[in-house]
Image (tube, rainbow, N blue to C red; front, side):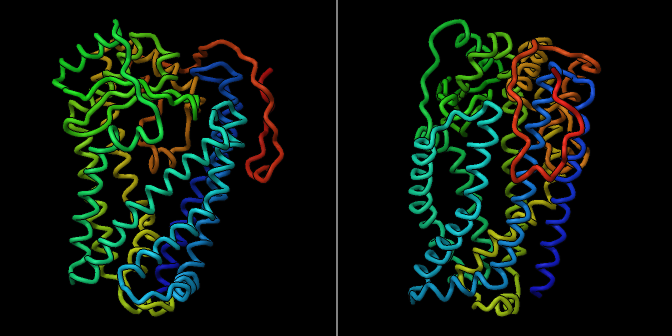
Length: 431
């Protein structure tokens, strides 16, 4: 049985590697061609940034695979031997803490490299080491407090019910919905500062749009996103009375009022179409299937891994294999999401003006250095939003051969490093 699990995970890893390699090769070629939507220099820089991220993701995929092999072939047995606690619930919680800490330590170098090397080099990162440490401490405290309680609850369910997978699903799904309710008002303020936007034309126009679709919110807020990152974004967060409109301060700096209203009109389209509930329903379906499958893993599998089928290792196996199950559903969920995005774009163009939404999208991809093209496999599996070229085409804007934006001075980025052997550039950066 263990050989089957390893085989399936190996196929999953190989497919991910293949997709990454195809994406690196595709963008490495496309960034050398005639630019679209942005200046030649920014187009080349956006392509280089996309390749750099994909290279990092590719290396991380290999590391994740070998970590998986270690866990199922030796790691679980090692960790079980380290924890000599008779209390079933405490044993499970300590086992899962150990499992999560090891995974975090292995993944930490990739997070640091992404933030302080790649994002720093391309002008995105605004986070200081001190802020990173502060965020890590806050996240760790929340994890050990609430995660520990959740692990204990799941361990109790596993030891108390024969159909633990069903009740475990019900608990996790309920908590996921609760987090959506609590996130804007209780969780997000732990990491960012939120201020009500000032009285004026923008607030009045946003309020007017919200009234048109019957959205009652907790308020309209500006978030200090710029202390960590320079990317632009906005979102509607929360459910029920906790719903609020959140605008990144970076977005307020770059978009004019009409463009902001068009972007918010897009988000209101998601609200009007009930997309958040559709997403919650899809997430619930995925969780149900995952819990059912992992709730019926044979005891022989655990014996082959050198451990007893106790609550801690059962939950760890669920966490370890959930990405595999999720990957199988990703194309379908991505397709549904892309369909919803087209509908939200149409809604936003009606609410805020088609030309304003087009203008906002052009600014967003330029400021966020979002390369406008991707390999078809990447789009099929991972794109929750349609390719921006397709979105613009649906809005009546043909970007073929169009170059917008001003030339800017971008520093030459170093090509040496641990990823230099993958996807060598075959073109020079535009002068």
